[in-house]
Length: 275
Image (cartoon, rainbow, N blue to C red; front, side):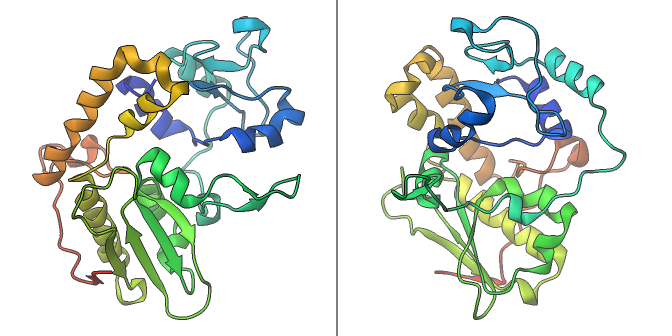
């Protein structure tokens, strides 16, 4: 699915994506009657109900599963869904609270779910953005979130003291000699545009030496079914680093249609300091 540009375009423009790990899946078992397997997707309507596609699933699973054990997630499938549930006029509202990585006590009292923010960042090979102090006004702006929320694993740190956003590299796969910290930003001293440029620059700096996400999946025993695509998956990711270094890699939230013929500028995050 992630190697289909037409699918990615539709997902970006018309859907909100949620990742369920195994522990979260157990919490949804009572509602859905099953847990999604590796490589599975499920599409929900605006009321949160599973969309039944009517085709039998593998192993007798309900006909609401797409992906590895169900109906292939194609551009046509997504077009059918958006035709049944047309988007409301104007861009959807977003809230930073939807994207802050949670830590919820498990029902059996043994630990919390989902996994820690350090663990999910390692799994997804994404940088972390830790918010300390008062919530920045920029992160209450839906348009700003639409640009930047997909760049990082967002974490709520301490709520008192000075406001800051600390950007950190993921530890898993970190190249020897690179610092874990990418910078600490004071959002109160920056305009919306300047803060956005600084986040873009931090993300691009991270992507210059981005640990290989695909390799993390391929090395997992549960990811062995993807190994036939090893060269494609790793090759696509390795092509990202030189684009980040020459400033032509578009950060998540930006599209080529908005920057046709113009390389994405790489501003220097002058308002940030080293950790």
